Length: 551
Image 1 (cartoon, rainbow, N blue to C red):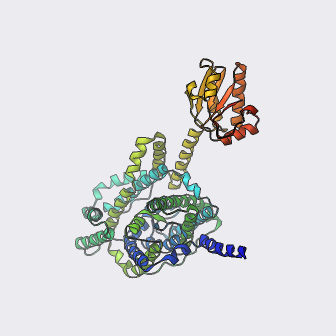
Image 2: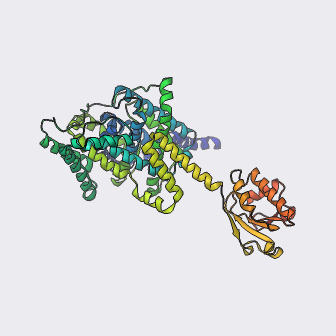
Image 3: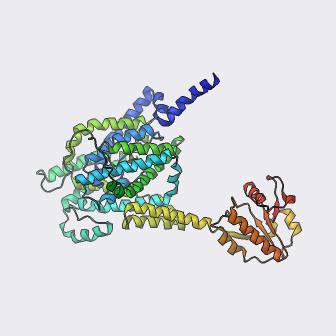
């Protein structure tokens, strides 16, 4: 009977593990429901201009940005772990998606859209597998400097890609970041003043709303005002380029192409985009968890993001992740639970059915002005200044990622950044400092037994493993006195190569008529030395007491 009762108590916990929304959905009250509804409506209004802008950034028809804010948003909210993060289209993923697929198909074409949906599906499968395998810790391999450098590079690419629209130029030939600038300079004489005026007007109005009316849907109102200005300047719709007509309707069903050739073509990019999406989502979820004090489950968040992209690909959505803008607005609007994100997607459906055709009146130069603002906000100036001021190695990682983003395919920029982070980490751990100390820093029993002229004292600030032994050995060779005392408090672990290093050093000391001593050894390291037979029995004291170990 006791086992049955225990099993009954465990069943809800097991069910909640796979269906996280069962933990917060029953806790809804009329007050929290009202707060979530207000936050959801606010988010639905914001995502209309944002989703259209990001879709254009990804090389897709504008309605795909709105599709990406429906099904993926709902699935990420229901199966993720963050209570305030809202998922959907993001600027970094949009530009990364465009850069990844640009070599394979023409932007906006049917082939391009088919590749987008398959890439989204594969990225979701990759994210889901990482979550099911409990590999949420992998996101920690992508350092903050990598994310900062990548987003700064992506912001510059975004701004460059939108300059032709902001200046009223016809679309330029596709090319990389470096290739676009000569084309822009060659067509300076074709700049249209009316397009520049509309872009500047939109940008100024957005900044004014952010400064004085931050709770208002500034982006949407700026686009409405810019559309009215364009209608006054060009009532015939013949001079100023507008957004392509957006069909009204729900997201159509779609089946990703999982043929062998397509999988071989898209898998590398899908892994990179999936990793970037997880980094974005994890960073945003951590930021809001720190503010609210909630506990975050990285593995569950991986599962939620994976399901959102898998499900989204089947409903014509492209790769999505956590949106910092929408999440911040969601929190400031008073959202109490993930239900706010679900309601945001629900409110977007009637907007998509009714208001979508009106987007045809929005000028492309206004969208370009909006995206220039988005690009500027992507650059984390505070983190860049902090990195440049504090750490040379982190500065190198940031710059490597930044220039890789500009010069290489974006998925390789992420890989280069992660590789640079690992190289810096390995360089630090394989070269632990061996600091010369005074005999007075050794334990009292050694100070009494040894004399300063015949003894060297060093402190090793790092673990003794195969990668560090060569560096430590070179630094110890300069100490030629008979006795050597190693202050070992900084040695967290030791492997077989480290044991061989100590044996070799002990033989060198004995050849000079002295001995090798270890002081302040940690219990785990001491136990390893005892198993190797390097510790004399008379020094086998309780681990919690200060000791000097003779080898």
